[in-house]
Image (cartoon, rainbow, N blue to C red; front, side):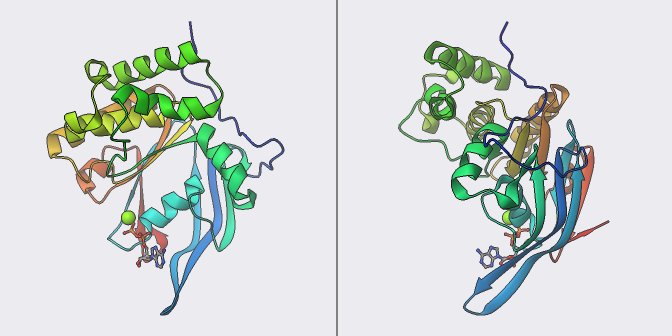
Length: 244
Ligand code: ADP
Ligand code: MG
């Protein structure tokens, strides 16, 4: 029996510090300032966060409040201007670009609003792709695992189809299966239902609930208060600050 869900995060980068006081995710006084030709703009201001394994957390706030910036800090897609970010034992704010890429590949599955599947690859090949680069699973395991993940998200009958043949909801399921490819402990997602009708959105949320029941930790940015309410906890941002 293969293990599809690891018990805790592994970091891919050797010696890293762990100063998260036992939390899976810890932000300590994180700020992000964007420098633009019009001057500097503070998108996140002294953000403190503690998130534990198995939590399903929604992140809400008006457009421009800093939600995407916060997710980009968590995944290491962008770097903080100040503060510390500890995720799955890694000091994300201290890793260099190469280390972040390796770490993210094993520790955080990212799901975007517009799916971002590769159009010329089949659905199965899209899901297998992160494993092809991950170096964790051998060839036969990768195919088996990709198929298992498609079963898990309920679109195994679309394995050989090109993404364009799928509905929006099915494409997002494929993107979630791809995010799970290397068995990361965390799924980070920015407006995953922003391009879906309410019926498909509800199904995606149910899938997230199922993944949380299997031990995953999920952070979901949404501007839909009803969907946000399905999470166990909601973090609200206003002008780059966490508010109650
Ligand atoms: P949200 O996702 O909540 O809509 P964002 O995190 O995308 O908010 O943006 C927060 C603020 O930071 C916005 O005012 C936005 O215009 C600004 N911002 C985001 N990214 C950049 C960037 N790369 N350069 C300059 N300003 C940015
Ligand atoms: Mg955004």
